[in-house]
Length: 85
Image 1 (cartoon, helix red, strand yellow):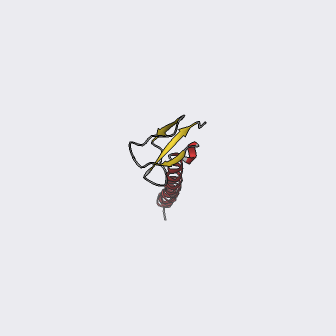
Image 2 (spheres, helix red, strand yellow):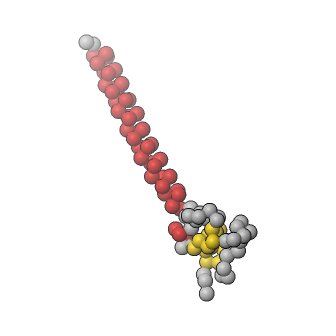
Image 3 (tube, one colour):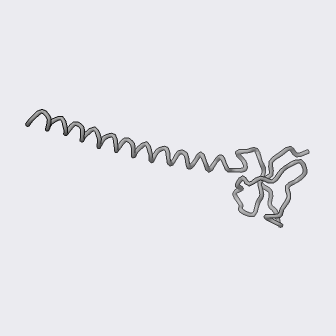
């Protein structure tokens, strides 16, 4: 076998290994970032409280709090953040 033919196999093997490593990293970071993104948008992660609201979405939060768009476990609840007296 000629030297040039042997060298090309090393290049092909290195390229296949690089592609496999990139795929593994892509899967790892995609799963990690989706979990992080979900927890960032939760009401409890912002020290807020979820209140059941009969008039949702026109519902109001208690005094000294504001209504936010952060998610609550129950879709009929609203996330309120602020200081309660």
